[in-house]
Image (cartoon, rainbow, N blue to C red; front, side):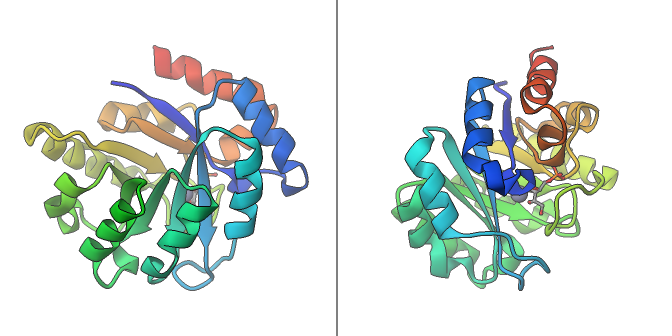
Length: 218
Ligand code: DX5
Ligand code: ZN
């Protein structure tokens, strides 16, 4: 299993964003998690296209764009044009999730679908053949720095079991409250793409990244 750390720039110091992204690249990070919030699907507002466009000029990392936005179909093309390499939409935010998946595919990037803690795996399991990644939220989406919800671990296990049983090639991403301890729980349950915001950006960025990378190698 190939594990990937995917730092979320939601916890970055936006006054030094470029610098911090370079530090992540130096530490060997290959994927960057980019949280877009609209103040409607989630209570808070983060940032959007202009920020992604700017950092795209300086970075060759894989841009994993997590849209916490109502009716995200409206913006898929825009985010791809700004430099997204994958676009993840929430099952709860789409009127027609299958159409959203089609739109992302047609735009030529990897497809992710996400479910909030209260949404059962069952709601999306019929779509696994059509996606590259499923993002299991392990906190209520909307803010960084929350505690990992342990009740979500069994959803990761359940999803992993279906993916293996059906012989599919779908990544399992987890997002929310990931640190050097919860990381192990999520990996054991079957997650292979680990998003971490506050854990990576609080304190020394490069040493935090190395701590996580070492755990992934164990
Ligand atoms: C929360 C976002 C997360 C957030 C994670 O809604 O989707 O990506 O940045 O932050 P931490 O790792 O601090 O929980
Ligand atoms: Zn996220």
